[in-house]
Image (tube, rainbow, N blue to C red; front, side, top):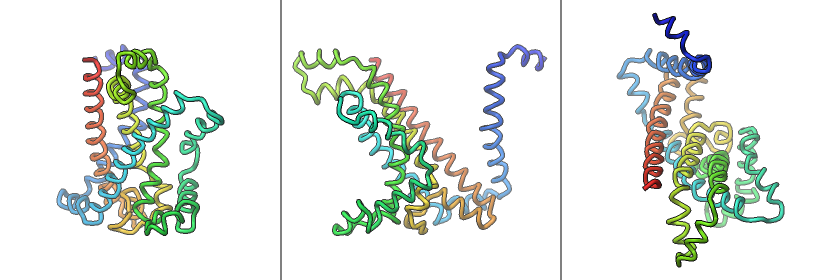
Length: 272
């Protein structure tokens, strides 16, 4: 009976389920099975150890801040690229995708050099007593750099489809440019911005190559969770590294579900 039902399933579904099983479901199940080698008390002790909690704080709080900043400035960049014509526009537009193609280790090395105390940008902040490279601020810079394209490329197509006649109609009715943006442009754009922010947040949380170079990786200072996992693996503590990974997975899943809820709420609000 089961085989008969499976034979009636379209081949596209079979390929999809098979691919997801091999590439997603089995690795996640294996990760949970590896962590199950620890007793509940041991699992809790590892997951809530002071150094682990500190890395959660650095990782998630910094990733949220980076994603929100990119939500604002990424939307602004997308707006400029869509609404204005200027010299070297194609070059600037293409450079937005550079973090996608650039190896993260190269990005980290470049950022650490530019934002160091002797770097082009970092030296400007030294007189103000602000140190960027090898601090938590440097981690934020790396997260902003690698997650920016997600917001720009998510918002840009939606902006291109917005009809400018709607804005002109709002202006004819006496609305200011700010009122037009807040009440006409932002509502349909808000779910898309949230999508870009969630993608950027996910990318920032899992970033390793660039942050490990621009940070000092000091516990309770700028050590992020992916680096802590790697340190546990270097110590052959595979189950302990898996526990930290599961905590990252669960927290990220909860936060992404919350963002998806906000997206659904935004679409519902837009249809009213």
